[in-house]
Length: 273
Ligand code: HH2
Image (cartoon, rainbow, N blue to C red; front, side, top):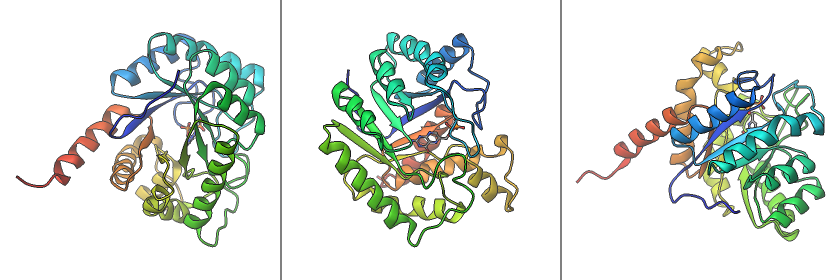
């Protein structure tokens, strides 16, 4: 099965089947709770549900293949069976392979298919792949991120990763600057302002800002990020900003709220009659 992007924005709902994800960790570990949340995300208007079994937040512990498979495969299979388009958020080729066999249609890899086995799995299945930029690796990436020109460097990396993936036969690629992955607040803001430069690469751009700590820092106005329940407004504004700048796919926790915010923006942006 393949996935076709809708003509307008594509809303990707986040479903973390993990004990330690920064926002929804522990909430959807039970199979029934995870499936219910996937169905709820679709009802709220998600075009795609992104199922992940390993947290990539700064400092998170790695998870074994067996444990990641145990967490995600039953969820992927059940949602796919109910006609919900599923993407699998994983860095592991074995997990991607099993998830695609269970009905997933997109592979969301925060390491941009760096592993040749990942590229092979995606190519063989005819799956879409989301290639994300990250400086360093999750455990240490926020220690001291550094760039000369963050937008150009990220754009160059994404262009090169797309070229490699396509040369290995990956059918379709989306590109993601990896907000918060080895980036400080200024880097994240520069990338959000630089979305048109990423759009110019000619591939669909995915943006994931939902509830991330830089939003917490910006809304608190200090180095101490506002708690999660005070990051929703900033998330909605940043999401609308990204779509208005040309991003095609938005990865969000609260799909309903983000869709409503986008509806409002569109109404304002329309030419008066
Ligand atoms: N962000 C997270 C995880 N996966 N994938 C893409 N393509 N882009 C992102 O920005 C992105 C991602 C981190 O958020 P979350 O899944 O909510 O948390 P955790 O990694 O702690 O599970």
